Image: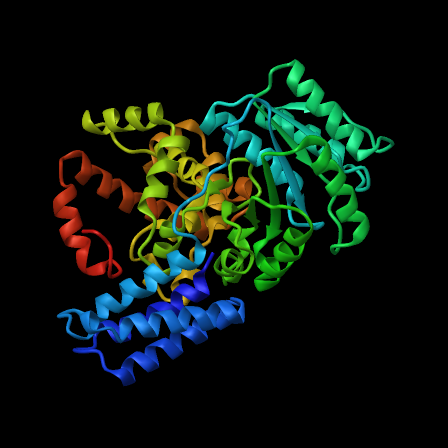
Length: 452
């Protein structure tokens, strides 16, 4: 998310960072570039105008013009303004009510609402230790009820059965009654989506809202619709009291216009970002962290939290112990590291959160593809346990067999073995306490902003 905006803003801010002093002229030029970057990111025009006006006003302040590092101060102004536009602080779900806390999910068709219900149920179970009941009041879309039942089983939430012949309001009230009797902490109600906001849709969801009195009414919207996402949320909010927004499909959105427009246009906070198909691909929205990501400074806090939550600590400790004893790093270990990385969203998700990676040219970013890692795992899977432990024995006929078994070419196998040999050397240095030395050697080769 935000790749295009990060690249465009990064270029502008690098130019002004190198300026010895700020003047009205170069501030005017920089603000114009910022404005163009936001418009290209499909940020709503009123938001862009206000953003640019605030940045210009603060940049022309005496404390900036007299600063010894005016370029850095200007970047800080842009960062602060990004945070202000998206909301000063992260706003979590309000669950401080007599259980069950009812969460009503609304949105247009195709926004990923049903999948988001499952993701939210999983997040509540794992991060808030809540017992969750889910129910589908979508009696119009074929297989919507079955889809939620399947997803509920995957995330360990209880599913309240419903039928396409039932009245949506009756479904919601029956589920609430069941949640009370069985002492569930949270009830999440999935409602029907439509291709557009219409009177029938709004009338139905208003009746559901009145019947269950939800503590949270969340609007689920596709981030790739850009500023239209904000306009749709505003129109919806005029008919129903929203408490927040969940942006979906952010992994496919290179612009980020929705994230930068919604709060300003609707007055409602973004509470979560959905980034991927997996049921764990939901993260709380932190305006300060997202602003840092947009400016290419990374998001180390989220990265650490994901590592704590998703990495297999036992396997990591086992590898560390193995290396400390001088035992070699083999292809089994290499495969496990790739799997751990995939558990955290893959290389593209990690790069989005690493400091300095926003400064990589777009051409270099385009070369980073998670499918390469899937191919790598397929090649390793096609090896025998002995070959994985002793890759030196992989010669001509073995390479041909491995390539055929993994659906790849012999040159792909050769490339993997070469990359692995380089990684083996690096791991050997690490096991001998050479981390500091290695980082000093790599320093000149890393993108600007990397913390070494």
